[in-house]
Image 1 (cartoon, rainbow, N blue to C red):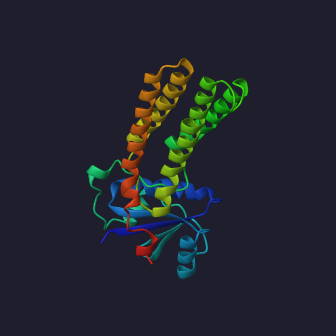
Image 2: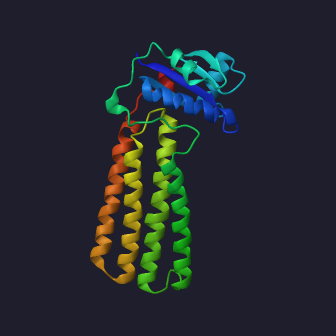
Image 3: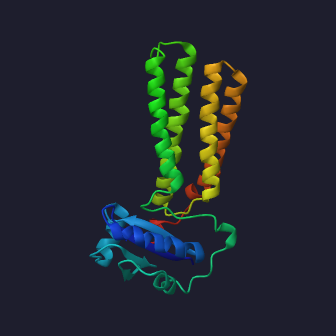
Length: 231
């Protein structure tokens, strides 16, 4: 049975981020099921009530409180010494907690930029009822640039955090990130220049981005572990 490590944290707890970084590093080396649980959420509150936890960060291993505060990397490794080493074939997966991944942060920032560009385009293009090329370009900057980046950026952060399952690696995330940018820019440029082929290529790039995201997310959604297995 896989050893389960649950890190109890709170959004306002600064040291919790340090504890998360330590355990994420250990989870890359040892075959453990690692979860970051907010004590403000029902799952975290249930463990706090059962174990009488008074402070965060706290580390619970296989249902028992094992450490209070931020462990050193050596302390954390010692706590899970009985767990086998992690299979290198899945070493590109990582666990998500309080901290945003770089791709998530850049994705959310990109969504804000595209939202501003879409709004500006509508203003100078005569609004929703304005000239067709400007209107189509602005709507695609919004629909693909803003909406897609919000969904992908927040999705890769929130879904793994709520399921307690790792998500496939950073390399795929950056490919997905680049494809969404390429898709948005090509679709916008294709509509502005009235080059249908360029817009179609942008559409293919968008499909590729969503395909990569689906490939990363399937193992997370199929995860059957999590809190219910630890109660």
